[in-house]
Length: 114
Length: 109
Image 1: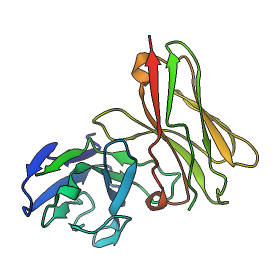
Image 2: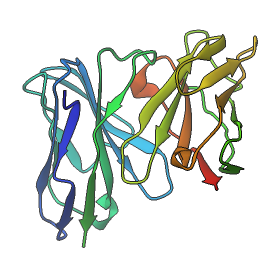
Image 3: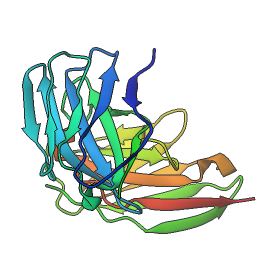
Image 4: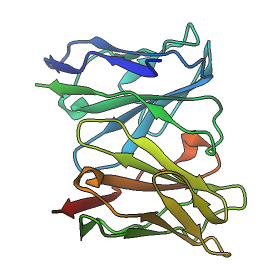
């Protein structure tokens, strides 16, 4: 059981480039989330999804886009990379959104924009 | 949305019991209290969760007083591998959770 898998683990982008961070889960969870974590800080929610075809903005959605075409996959797209998007990105999933349902996290993608 | 306050850092020694207290004065009726652990270069991992009184699992205990305005995570007989950041979270829905900087726990030999 792989849980939540994120790729790539590391990436360096030039300003203005685009990329997609991949996230897939094999637990048949309905809810999936994208967070970013800056050094020494807590996680900030970028986008979340309540199921295939349904997404919504979190606290810091600007500069990002998401899609959810299947239950398993929830990719995060950066269209025009900026230095402010240098961060560690975590994908998570849960069966339901109620906070008594555990969040399962991937191992993260460390992104540098130079 | 309930915010939490917890110490920025704590030190302890192997074999000791460690208690990390979290304050959440404006907790709402439907909010749960959840603690996550994060090691460097890894995603957070669920430790324990509760609504009231005491909860115990194989790795920790969670003490919640009757007014629910605070909670204490207790780690029995810590080891070097318990060095990590611990987050206290309060909320009804996962998407509403506010992640602070957590408590950086350092265990010394």
